[in-house]
Structures are given as structure tokens and as C-alpha cells.
Length: 314
Length: 76
Image (cartoon, rainbow over all chains, first blue to last red; front, side, top):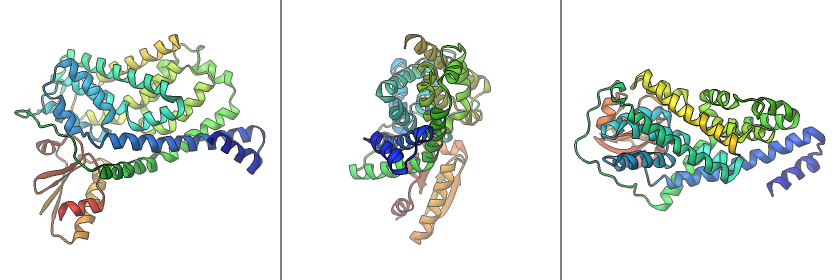
């Protein structure tokens, strides 16, 4: 429906023709579609997450077996909010509750990777199949990555002396009425939307321009099968782009429609969300550079492996 | 009344501090507002997501920026 409406608007109401029309049609259609999906998915996610907060996750993970800890931490990473600015209290808080460092990292990898903006954008642009692949393999990287870091015995790389809390923490879900939850979720959704709607427009705008003007061969030769290093380059390029997941993803849509392989696109998106430079800088205050390096190396190679795997099988 | 805003200097923590000041002014109560940046002190409150709000030693909210009206309701 959106598609026909926006086509009607561009070709009939404004009366544009040719490439300009195609690019504007693409721009209007995509922007409105993504805005709509962002609003609905972010609302749904924040409504669900009004039951669980990070304090609950911490108490829940305390004293669990290693397998349950890694899987649980990664899954909770999907539904709890994460902001790189609270990485320090989160990290120290988990250690304080005697949650193993590996499980803490499972959470720290999963939470930013499975954030509501990335999921909404992926769902809007690539549909539920790619979104599920992204979430599933993202969980895989979080579980394995955390497990590996746990095996390495990195406890001495924590630069701060954390006193463990004695005894069991109490885990309780957040109690509020449905109406309050909905109200809070909606105001949170609007907050996020206000912050990112402009990036969506810019991303879609540049995408529309590529869509209308840059030949497919050109993009395919750089990002398609012709370039065996595409995945690695994509991951390296994704690291500094964390805050702009909303603007970057519409670009990826256009690049894949023009011949970029889906595995390369997946790796790039995971790198954008999971490997964040600001987060590394913040964590540097409490853990050694060596551990940050290991963290990035493990997550980075996991993401690269996923990219090549999908380029081969899809 | 003592109101503490816990946060390590992120944008959201600064916003919450501003909201609290407004709320105190609006409610007309006399309250001491303290910004706590020391991570060790924040940990003592058992808070794992910042910004958090503590009123008279009790954690009333964590991990989000409240609205002015919500804070007014909390300090009443």
C-alpha cells in the first residue's frame, strides 16, 4: 500500500519522470516505511522490557551454572536496554555479584548487538528471516565469545578492586500497571525516534541516490564475489559507526540490492553494533587494554566467520 | 531530604540531574541535591544501570531518565 501511494505521489502529484522520480519514490517509500517500523518495533521492545531491568538480570544470573550463565546472559541481552555509558557500573556490578567474567562478557557482547534500533531497522529492511539469522548468530558469538574469555582466566585484567557482595541478591520483576508500562514505553519510543529519525532520512537519501545513479557493476565489483576481503573490510569499517546504526542500515539495503553479498552485509551490521569504539574507551577505565584487545579480537573474528559462512552458503 | 543522582557523567545522567532540580523547584520542597560520580559509591547502592535516583538513601529508579512530574511524585 505504501508503495503504490508513494509512487502515485511522485509520478502523478508532483509529476516527476525518469531517474529523479525513481530516486524520490524510493526515498519517500523507504523513509516512511522505516519510520513506521521503528516506532512499532521500539515500542514493542520497550513495552516487553518494562518487566525486566538490569538489576533483575544480575540477581537472576548469580550463582548459575556456566552453561546457563552464558546462554542466559546472551538472551537477556536482547530484552534489556543497554547504553555504552552504563557499561562500567554494569561490568563492576556483575563482578560484584560474583558472576564469572566470561558470563559478564556474554552479556556485554549480546546487549549492544541486539539493541532495539538494530532489530527494528533489520526487520524493516530485510524482513524477519535475516533478522532471525542476525539474532541467532549474534547470540552464538555472545555465548562462545564470553565462554572463550572466561576460559582465558582474565580476572587479573580488571583494574579495579571489586568487593563481592555477600549472600544472594533478590530477583524481582518490575511491578507496574499495564497502562503505566505502555505510557513509559511510548515516551521512550518517542525519545529514541527523535534522536534517530534524521539519520534514517540521511541514510535513505544517500541510498536513494546510489539506487538511482550508481551502476550495479561498480558496487558488485567492490562488495560482491569479486572481492574476497570484502567481509574483513566491512567489519573494520563498522567499528567507528556505532551511534549511526539507523543511518547505516538503509545504505546496506541498497548495496545488497546492487550486488553486495548478504554475508558481508550481516558482518558489517554486527560490527556496527557489537564493536563500538566509545564503549571500548569507557571500558578502558576498568579493564586492561589487553582484555579489550582480546574482547574485540574474539568478537571481530566471530563476526568475520559468520560473514564468510553466509557468503558461501547463501 | 537528600536526593542523590548516580551517574558517571553520561548525557542521560546530566539530563536527570536537571530534571531533579526542576522537580524540586516545582514541588517547593527543601532538598539537598547531590551528584554522585564515584563508581565505587554507585556500586554500594547496588545499582547496575545509570542514571539512578536515590532519595534519602533508598534507590527509587535506575537506568532511565524520569520526567519532571515523575520526580515530583517521588519526592512528595
